Length: 576
Image 1 (cartoon, rainbow, N blue to C red):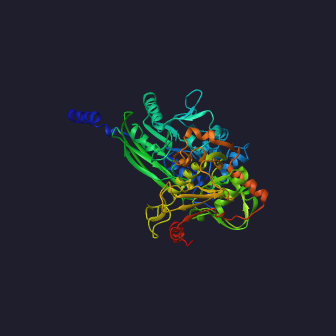
Image 2: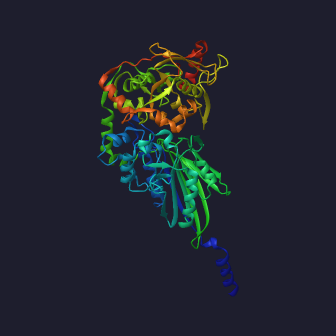
Image 3: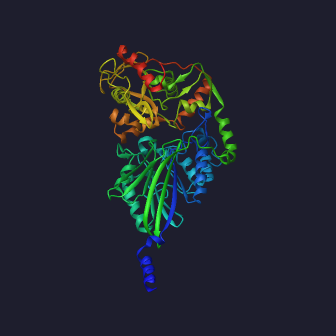
């Protein structure tokens, strides 16, 4: 008997795993939802595979399966993209904001701020945050007066006795894209420096069992003037302590483990955009006598495109859905022909030149810069509705007029086309600068660089010689009225606020203008977004006859015309 008692004593003292307890916590993350709350695209007025209505179905399933041991997080850029958000942002500013209403209904635990949330302006962003029944984080969004975080830097939550810390940050490159009036009184600190500071505080003061980073910044770092954009991977690798780094902003799906400088594994995960996918992270913690002895972290991306829509969600927001549908269905004018961004990559196009004409008409500038903000958008011949305006102009940019020299205009275009056009060595080469991207079993041809930086100009006549490299591609012949173009003369140039603040670096790297000099070049700025003025202009004119201005072309045409047909088919799977 003594031997048996002794054996039990040994087991009790030396095999603690017999008394271990496992706790399972699931983290679900959305990012870059861009106003896609409903399974309906209010821009195309068609059914939509994304949406928070599908996310909610999945979240509720998981809450039931795990006895509410679920943490629901959003990583920003939720206030912009679809007319749903636009309507609450700028049309009905009295009713509860639909974004906070939806997020409260879904019982989000924590939110984060994205650059497009800041883009709505402090009034709109502040209204949304105040209405949320959960904290919205922003450790590196700083008050310029107090030099402390404007929003809560981190939040502590409990699930099943597990102490969880969530640190939220945003890319600091906001001043590169957005005018200061939208974020006046704030500034944005470096992510890695901010993470070093707050992880130390969290570990010393909170001693959490789990540390999550939720960062509205992408995976591949980019230096943009004095700001480092997309620093999420750097933080995961260089700041020890994180179990998971959830990131976004770059719209690129990711789910993998990386090692940090301490040799620990960190899960990084990004569900991309439009609520097509959801980040799903399982953390299983093993405790012995209240001491954490083991932690397992696994993640996956859940494809929600075929998930059943929550009937409860749709019923709850039926009135809001119908209000937005009525808003976008209002007629504002008529187009005499169908226009598409597809033509814009191969020469002067009716789609882009319509915006050029409207910008020049609104601003009375000498020259206009415009890029296709949507890769593949179309507005059909006939009646034009409010919904079409979100196709015509995707973002809530302001219209700027800036003073640029003729040389700066040329250099701006040299950089734009160098990212757009392949330097052709033979007639068989690609006209466009393309890359091959493979996703699973899919294979498609895409641009090497973002097409929203492919600015063309109106107001001048010019050729783009595709056999030449940057610096020698652009040959400006004259102003559009036939008068000479002078490299030494100062011109008034109409362009959007994203570009005017340095977005895409066409003004800084291309034209060579120091970033801190850009503001002094602005001689006019609208007080409302450009889409508003485009809409009002179309309303006043009634019937619009969009036609290409034919003020620029690719040369030599015996090479570029056949190459354009080949590349058009590669990009769009159809004949030009």
